[in-house]
Length: 298
Image 1: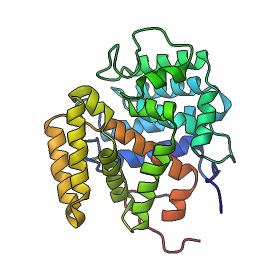
Image 2 (image 1 turned 90 degrees about the vertical axis):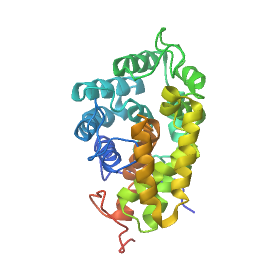
Image 3 (image 1 turned 180 degrees about the vertical axis):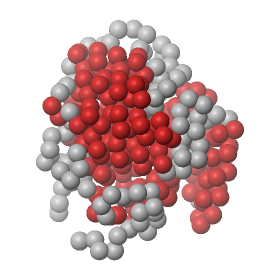
């Protein structure tokens, strides 16, 4: 029985991150930015540009401290956009990108990277969060960026884990990402859905599984749980799920509810599928939103 897939060499880490961001941004996920839906301060083109901007820093992830990778990536993203476009994506992907070439890409490998963080990493990550200025954050929201960086970055992530899904990955492990969105998207592709539909449904599955913490922070936990229940109802709609998803999308946009942290997790899942060559084995080279399961798989 084979173990977890290793980091593959077909596509560089930065290229993989940029492709993951482009695919995530292009799929018409409920409540998120996509080619036909923008926010006042963020368009699809800007979201794609932010993904391209982080590529050089992500490419260097194995050769420099984790905090420096995150700070460099966020600085590059901020130069490319008007708003905090992808802080959560950077925080979710950077520990994965720091797993050495040829090593199994798995939760334990990400945990080993995170276990090696230092006070310098904490300072750089806090500087990155401050630079990104994520909306709705105060002293008790997500990380307490009003104070100095802690000596232990993981201690800060543990403190924020109940309030933020990305902090939860760092503090409690990447297992739910691999068992959830990674497996969900791959499974939907194997059911012969297009990659775009697989991403949309993977996003709904994660949203149904776990209330989005960006919605919870801005609108309250009860609202986030209600959105999760609505996402579950879309998935229960069977073949009419696209129409049900369109109705949920209208519901979210009318209330300015953005399941953005769920989208960040989807982007990280796509990064894993790309950098381990799982996506190309399912869809062929240069996958797009319209790609479907290849029939000449080895």
